[in-house]
Length: 217
Image (cartoon, rainbow, N blue to C red; front, side):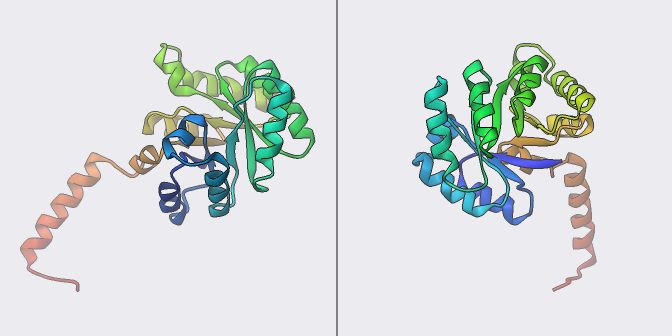
């Protein structure tokens, strides 16, 4: 499974990238706002840090303006994936940009039918939002499973990019279902390494080591 980090914080990206845990980056208008930086500037910096796809989102709502914004974003770097919403105009934009050779990430997916349309429009990635479905008592993981079945049935090449990841369990469950990618905030990826029994075991080892009076260095 690929790990994309969902942030525009270049320091957090750099730390995870140094460990080999970053296969790509996703951003959105909210994350750009949080960074306090210019979208073109920070996106270019991120693209230079990693080799994988970097999603940069259009903010227009109509096809003509989406295309203009998407083409401008695509010029930032070769590893840009233009992010478009799963609307009719977004699908039209996806079709055009994909045919031009630009990676496209279709976002805000909440149904298997939407995911099917995105695949047929040539999307490189489909981003189902697990956590937001869970928030309204709909099983977000079931959506991942449904999309996986449909894509496998027809050999669609669109990658399932599980988004709105809230917990470490979301990550492992998506891996078991067969999502191609998860995108998560830095703290969620860091929490994958944590387990209370690891902490307890380490504490016990350190107490016993102290009793020996020995040193390695």
